[in-house]
View (cartoon, rainbow, N blue to C red):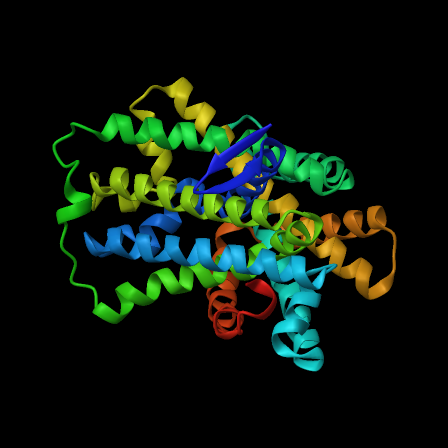
Length: 357
């Protein structure tokens, strides 16, 4: 059976693979900060109407560079993100950058575990420590089953997140300030507004390579990679625009809340809000499992150790680092990682088309 689109033939099976790639891409990008609305506020909505154009720019970069990352990984048959980094920077510098990426991913993994514990502690009758342990155990089961299990989790979680984003949009339409996403002014400097989407994309893609690289290398159909990456980037863009639309209508008061999206959902009822908190945890969980999987591949390539002990060691390490707390880890690690990710981002953009064509 064949589907025809844009003058090219793509088998139905390839479309299914492309959709799985797209959902895995979205699930890797959409973590705790995105799902709560904090990332959208900090990188976009606070800049007023200009944020709409900035989101479109970010979306184009997500499509272009997400596809480029996976196609490069596919062409060089990268076993892990270190192989891609060596391709981009050369053997010596690539190995150092791979080591930095490993440290960065472990830091973010610890942040995600702390975020999972915080969700349980703040919204359910479960302590922070118990939340950490629950996150650890379930993650071990999923990651032990490999990339297919991670893709399967994203195939469920991402559509749920899209549904809740649509609910927020529908509930915002018709409210008095619904048009502010296109009219709100901002006194922020021009340079700050237009560097925000670049920082946002560079940080997210530098960390997403832990999954995008093995994903691109494992898929035989280059056309499925292209369509999956394009669809994933488009979905991320649509979700950013939807979140910006809803959050703008409540500016500036919405900035006082730790989980602003949850406050928007609250007007639909406590039951819906509780379900949304569950989705937030699920988004944290998908990013968490994706990062641990990427770390496992990297450590296995460096040491030759079997997967399951490595997974257990990473999870236990993240558990102990998670004792510092979610907010402290975010404020300490994210600014540093974001700045250094610009180096990887610039190199990926500057790389000749070669294998990614």
